[in-house]
Image (tube, rainbow, N blue to C red; front, side):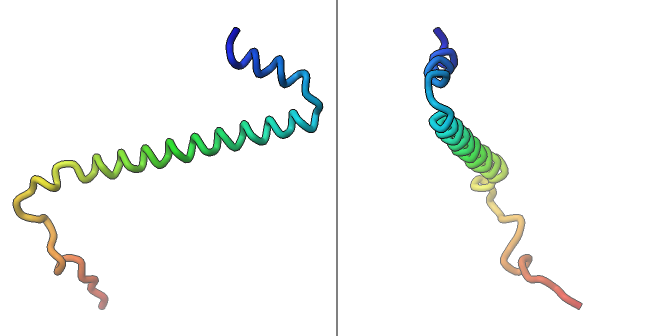
Length: 71
């Protein structure tokens, strides 16, 4: 029997108030999982963007390049 089927069987035996708690907890777990995946993708994206920069002999930009010019 699949896990989802087992959960469904238990859920059907619970009163409505408890079913609501289970729903709230499931939504919390899903949100937590999605936030973790977002962090993982963000880290991967940054790592990909920075890949190879440590091997450069001469930096492309210096601190002088960071100066903003306003007219």
